[in-house]
Image (cartoon, rainbow, N blue to C red; front, side, top):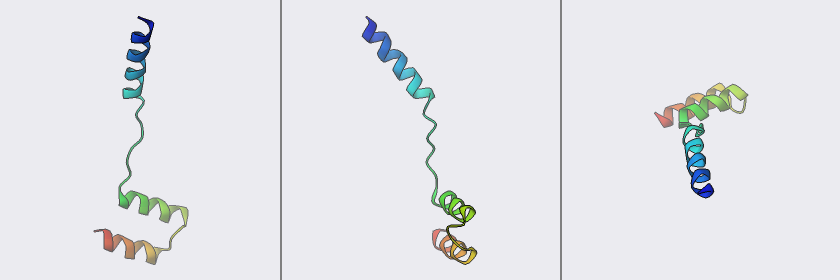
Length: 51
């Protein structure tokens, strides 16, 4: 009986605690630009190829 409740509670928490969102390619590109990993020219070039 204990195992049943443990599994049930675990499943409920895992459903509500799934906060991982998948980032789109544009979101990742914007993040890299904001961090300074790429220049504005690189940003524009990559953005053109994605769209």
